[in-house]
Image (cartoon, helix red, strand yellow):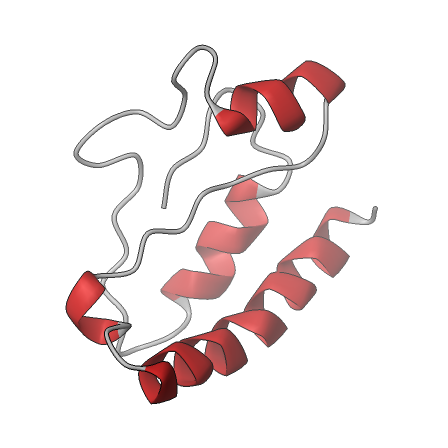
Length: 87
């Protein structure tokens, strides 16, 4: 998972993801979570919106069924992390 200086959403999301016993979570690895001028900078950071970037291994989302699986798995985690921010 990648994030920049604003950790309002990133920290609750990291906590929720790390609570999943079968996930291996990297934090800003192997690079930092902010690239000047990228989509997150333009659409989130510039507007002070909550943000984080989740990267999923390509082999885990190669098929439509795998994509549906990960969407269904991540959706409640994202919703819970957002609720944890109080926003």
